[in-house]
Image 1: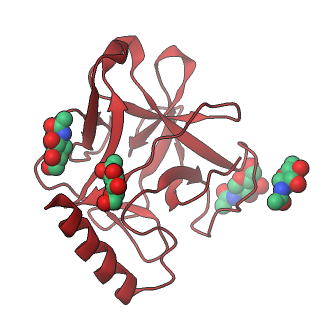
Image 2: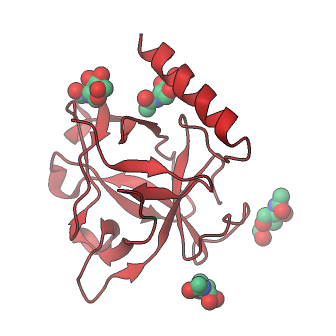
Length: 172
Ligand SMILES: *[C@@H]1O[C@H](CO)[C@@H](O)[C@H](O)[C@H]1NC(C)=O
Ligand SMILES: *[C@@H]1O[C@H](CO)[C@@H](O)[C@H](O)[C@H]1NC(C)=O
Ligand SMILES: *[C@@H]1O[C@H](CO)[C@@H](O)[C@H](O)[C@H]1NC(C)=O
Ligand SMILES: *[C@@H]1O[C@H](CO)[C@@H](O)[C@H](O)[C@H]1NC(C)=O
């Protein structure tokens, strides 16, 4: 059932724009300070990979930047305005399909191990992640444990604007 839904979405996305770098399944999210296609073989200063982050074992996963030397990177699917990714729960207990919650200004991008109502996330033709149709508004802000965390319209003085791109291959 679920597989059918994803196949239909992927097929219609392909026919709308065959240049779409990331289909709606199995992509990585990277940050880049430009709307241009991120260079494939890069360094973290330019394009940064993202990883799940649960400071102090809190339930929602956040997205943080991660440099070279990571073990693996989360891969995402997008359906009904919601991103999902498989991950183990806090303390490594269980393995769940985490779903993004509706994105609101001034808060971290969050993934929850629960079903979510239809969300407001999409990918545009260039593979940029949008919220309510806007690609501009993602920010990288200082988070807990000295990590850099992805927010939507983070207002903290530490926040810097970025764009979030769906890509197939890790930048490093
Ligand atoms: C993006 O970052 C690079 C490296 O830090 C910098 O050279 C470039 O000017 C920045 N571009 C934009 C559009 O901010
Ligand atoms: C990627 O960059 C690394 C380090 O700069 C270099 O050694 C490697 O050859 C590059 N690979 C490709 C495919 O360009
Ligand atoms: C994404 O979709 C693909 C193809 O249907 C599936 O194999 C994969 O498990 C899905 N991943 C997530 C995170 O839902
Ligand atoms: C995440 O959402 C999907 C699709 O609605 C659902 O099948 C899945 O059970 C949800 N994950 C959890 C842990 O509830």
